[in-house]
Image 1 (cartoon, rainbow, N blue to C red):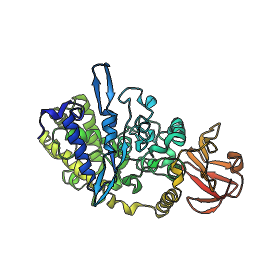
Image 2: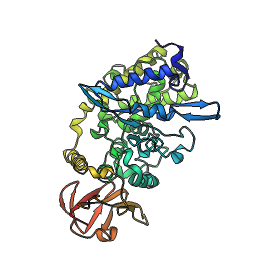
Image 3: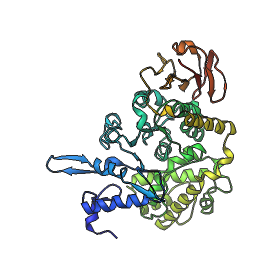
Image 4: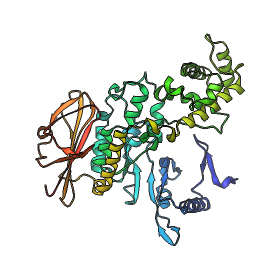
Length: 450
């Protein structure tokens, strides 16, 4: 449908658009404006660091920031009203350079345009909060979030982090087992516990991101049921997500995994055995599905599923997997598993953020944010923020990760003083001494001048 002027060449996802061509550039910007005109408040640009080109004169790769920032400065007209959209950029430059996690400032665009926002460093896919010592290893990024992050989208739960987290080999990473007794419980608690929700929603600046599948504690994955060519490969890459998100009890629910059961995978153990061998054989054959099918025919014990197993049957299994997982990830089917006390606490945290919009700005010179030293097996965090007009102070105390720890508030935060009342996760007087387990915390406020 597009002529040659629109295509600049192949990339890892398909084709690069030739947005350096002036006509193509104008058409793309106009299309974006018209899409926004359907009523969207904002625009998120995925992989913004990939909008680059080779500068022959300078012999270097240049990011086309002018094109990116123009997207947010086009006037949008709806029902007689004009506005400029809220723009968010996922920009991890210098990704894919090997040291991008250290070298990326995540500020390349917000430093050029005060209206722009970027994903903060903890929202990118490589962050795995279920890993042991994750939070202490990322402390430098948390400090940047506190003092530089007012234009960052914050939090650790989104479509990328949940997908990458569930793809992690649980045997290749040291897991924070304090998050739960099973892998599914660990995964859900890692991306949605009261502790870091207090941190991101009730203390740190920026714009906290909520991901509905995490809030409802539903599974998530990478599914593609329109592609026969790579369907088996996509299924194989997701096989570890079963370990993190499915167990026998969930598998046996009558409304889950209907298609796979019809194909003969009657138990979760049947499916797990098939998927483990699929992963091994896809690696050994370099994704040759025909040879993989032959390998399965020689297995002892044999795998469940349709017989004979050939390329066509593998495609049928892959499609059943995609469709069943799509249904399994439906948040409406997991509401009955929600805990009323937890959801009430999380709602209170979000209301607190809305009632205190000044928290979106960076910490000031009189604010503080630190962890207890020495760590002694527990990342105990304390923070104190002051309203810019000195009308309210907010106190954060948090066990971000580690063994249960008892702390004296006056020792942990000597400058805090008295007169505090706890408001999150529930309302009560602030005790002078308290014990916090892994992921537990509180927020207290004091109204009036400090």
